[in-house]
Length: 446
Image (cartoon, rainbow, N blue to C red; front, side, top):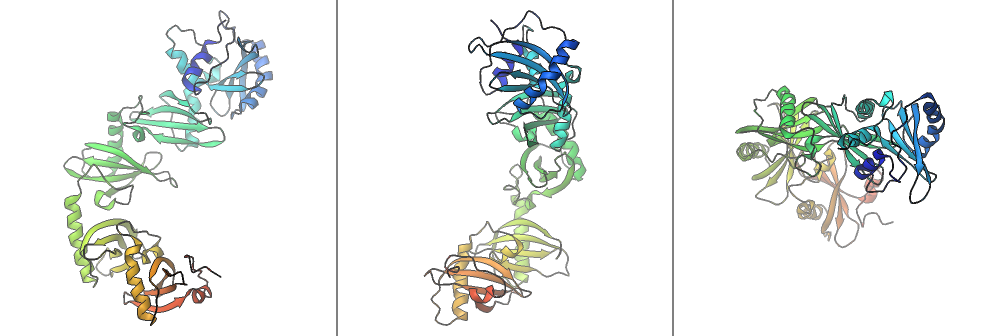
């Protein structure tokens, strides 16, 4: 005997290859009459609870029942409409209950060339795509779906849908019971196996162009790519290529609203920076300028590379990591944005006080420098620095904790913020009494 056609189709597309039960299928489903509704409203709540779906029952009806041809177990089907938006067809067995959302059910029915698959029929499920409106809103996206395509489910209960919200505005929605929905822009899937089919790349480019126009930058988009997302704010970053004109990195909200544009020469810290735009000429100009600025500040550095880290609003300075061709250790510089300010240069260990980490050079390149500082302050010192980190700061100095290669307790070096060298040399015991505890191996022994 054959089973309900709907459930054969949904199983094949969505439930990780699990076989559905083979229930008897009548010649035609009975109408949704009062008897079927009364039975559904009475019995469906238990099936909803067993299926573990988020559904405050709004409407329900008994669809059909039959017997599994293999296990001989009774199988009962209900359709339910929920206040949360999504409607479902439920397959209830004595040992388990499974739910198939009406979007997937109706999509599979539309793909059935013989027209024998069952669709959701309750009035509240007549347009099942609208059931995603509150789900999308919970994921931070305002969207009235134009088209929806189920993409499949995973064994751990995650379901995926491609949703077209408007021209060029396509997303992939991830849902899972008890977990906040995730909304991912179709641009993130371009060129991959899960690339969106309802929203094509040219449409996305047109939509991005509308958003990018708010940057005020003269640009005819020649190419684009998704770069990264900020998990805290939900903001997305896109690289915009402008043909022969300079490209830039665009920051947009999770809802797709323009926030800011960042020149490619200032975007190195955003997931590796621009790749669609050649920034070599502009970078060479910046390097020449930084060489002049560090020389004027009295710091010896033949700048080879740089990485823009942001703007320090307190000092109205741009913060830049530098690598130097004439010595292995790098530096972090704060260059004032107005002529009244003063350039401040610190080594990559001191940069820890700004919660910054250098990537153009490694901390170990500074160990020889700190070994010399300790020897200069403590005659006869045998400490060869094997580790170091920023520990704390005072009004006038950064305190850099060091560890010694011989395993003996290291020292805390006071580096003057004026750039005038080193202040006092402290032990971990001395700084601990001031409320700063050493953390490096060899310094925490009792």
